[in-house]
Length: 273
Image (cartoon, rainbow, N blue to C red):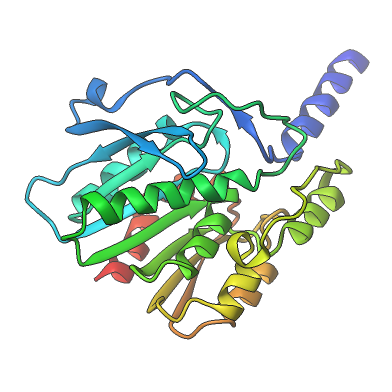
């Protein structure tokens, strides 16, 4: 009986703590073609010489809309296949990509005690440069991200004049802020980059100083998330006009989509009309 109780306590502790930060996977568990999805593999160059793997999903008919999706740094872009196909049904070209050190992107040594790397900003800007070069006819450029990718997408979008809207699922406001949240929730102290440009990486500074190009932002926040808190999301929403918050009851950044998939995309569909 005591043994079973101990096992239950251990499992409870393991499941109580969310998984944060960088957990790269090099192999794809599945690829879009296994679902019969029309997509294209592309190689995307960054300004510092890295090569990123990207997947481009294509709508059935030519479209003037494209969306760039950034994952949380846990796993790789194969985890976004279902989400990507939902955006395709809304008439978007969709680009997913892997940061350096993930999937088939260039090798990069990742210390999993880090929350993020400043170099990931170069990766996302490399993707946006690719969009600007090869999809110059698209009149509507949007971005979506989750967790670490949500905060990064907000900051990069504020610095890119071609981006008009962002869907931000569980963003950080500042790196020090999310580090403090994680330490409070788990006792784990993560490492952060040093010497980075706050306006380039942190949404709080990017949206304060830039971002006049953004006509609308949809924030998605999990009611039960103690890493990307509703309080932090509300603080970001106050920095710009035309922002909306969709709060997922009982959700966290890992479950906001799966809690109610129909509702999740109902909110996105309304936002993107």
